[in-house]
Image (cartoon, helix red, strand yellow):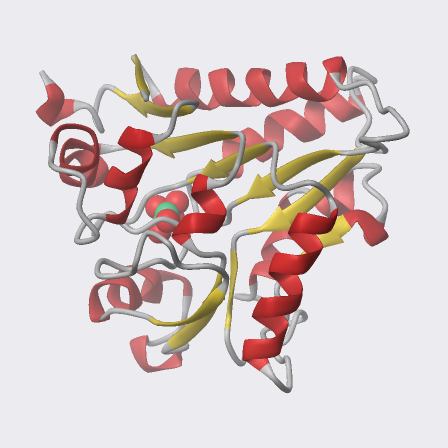
Length: 248
Ligand code: PGA
């Protein structure tokens, strides 16, 4: 695993966006592999990255015609039209502004009548595209990756996850009140993330410094899910100086 420390949030987001833009530009579809498969996060962290991808599309630098996406997670019980659903977030921040065909977008359905089956089907869908090529993720203040909270097994696949009070508290900033935050989510598992050919964790700001320190310097432990990336041969933490505060 590598750690890349960049001075500012802007530079860190620029690096990640450029990395994705280059991968999209360089991808040449073949009969065996028709699509570049991206695993995508929501949250505040990736917003500037998505802005840069939209700009690159608008400047005719890239097209998403040969891209397939799988989002990391979705709140259980929220309709895609709910303004705090991750469907809604992705449409607003990325999908509505690029030429990615709707049929190539995958997001777990928060209203699935059988959530467990939805998770099984999602894993199968990912496998049907040959797995995720580049998984981008943020990190929670408690070290979670996607909604894999501390204590989640490293060999977990897509599953229904009970959210911790810390995550509900942190995410309540997007809702009117804390009790509006769903208690459960559908999330890809830690094994799903680890199976990606490349994993990029983007962490910005001082609030993430402790989680970055534990993930990068701490022992590899299910108590800090992101520490798993230490063992990924093609894993990279991209952090700004504020998030790297405890590494020096
Ligand atoms: P954030 O969330 O980007 O909004 O900080 C990241 C996460 O909780 O994984």
